[in-house]
Amino acid sequence: MKKIIDKKKIIFLVGYLSLIIGFILNEDMSGGSRHDYQVLQENLIKTGFENGVFSYLFDFYVKGQLFHSPIFYIIIYYLQNLFGNDLTRFLVLHVFLLLPYLYLKTINLKFKKTDFYIYFILIFFLSTSYRSIAIWSGREILTIIFLLISIFNFLKFNNNLKLINIYSSFIFLGLASYISPEIGIISVIYFLDLYKILGTKQIIRLLFFNFIIALPFLLYLNYYLQFERNISSSFILNLKNNLPFFFSSIFIYTIPFIFLNLKDYFKYIINKFILLISLCIFFLILNLNFESNIGGGAINFVLKKLELENIIFIFSSLGLINILYIFQKHLKYNIFVLCVFLIQSCLNFHFFQKYVDLFWIIYFVFLFKGSNIDYYLKNKKFITYLVSLYSLIFIGALTFK
Image 1 (cartoon, one colour):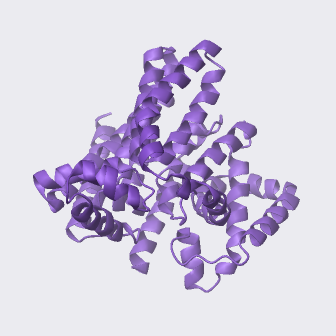
Image 2 (cartoon, helix red, strand yellow):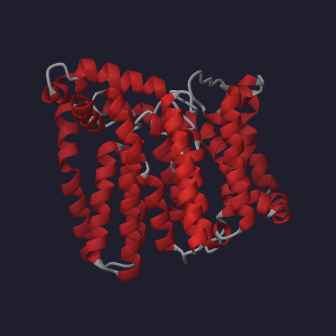
Image 3 (spheres, one colour):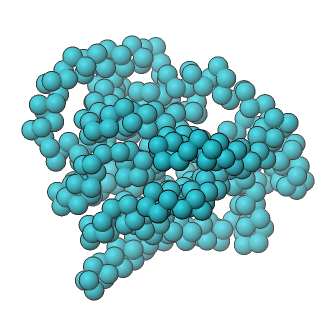
């Protein structure tokens, strides 16, 4: 046991030191986090808060085109006033360290505790997206902290059926949504599970409770934001344009699962060959006459470098077919969860790799359903493939920079 504890400490220490070095060197492995920081946490705060917080909320912000919630920037504004910009970034980096701790705590609650789970915390230090939000104080840090606490309480409710846990779960999901509004859609997954456990009266009470939590934000939207400019006609268009990017990004993270069961996977592909061809045609048509100069995910980025961006439909098709393969059991439920993940990731006009990178390990372990998930998490080969994948992405990001 002492050996495992030491191993955990070593992983945390090496990971932490690598973030400190990245902070000093202004590392930006995801490619856009430094720019986002300069635009949103330097320029926007400098100009937007010139006449105070209320002026920012009810005058400056409502005239902008930013889809983000203003709450995070208000927090950063107060921190920058107290500590300055660089020290605020440094403090937020240390808040980031809660993420691997909360993830490990939650995974140990859901599954029988095993030594292999400690290797999952490597993801938080190898992932280019997690490193970038840590170094450039991304709003996603607070979002994911609240989301993990929410999931932890939801899992506790599943274990003990105490209502205090489910109400706590929705409170923290609400807090996550006040930082990143798109996260609120995860509540439909909660309600789908709760409908089978709780009676109609309790479900209605929970719906009313969620309405009360969301009321301040809804009032703000109604009176001060022209919210329809972001989600009306453009929503369907964004979804259509981002579908190929979403599934090509998903493809990357399915590779360790496929490597673990190559023979069985090829049998599945042969049986589903017509479906695969149909998906290729679907994504090919979807991608016709559409060109994205910003974002598009890692596969799209590499294909553009090779001048092969027109074949992205192949990776999109494989990404979707791989998800169907991995989550064959409880397929209808998992397709529903996949749709929630898709909507959450594709709301914006531009699609970025981090939309999938930051959340897939949360969806895979805690939100998708499958009796084989435990098998993957405790499999030495799978962990090796997973860590190798992130290491290769890490090296690739350094090389392309």
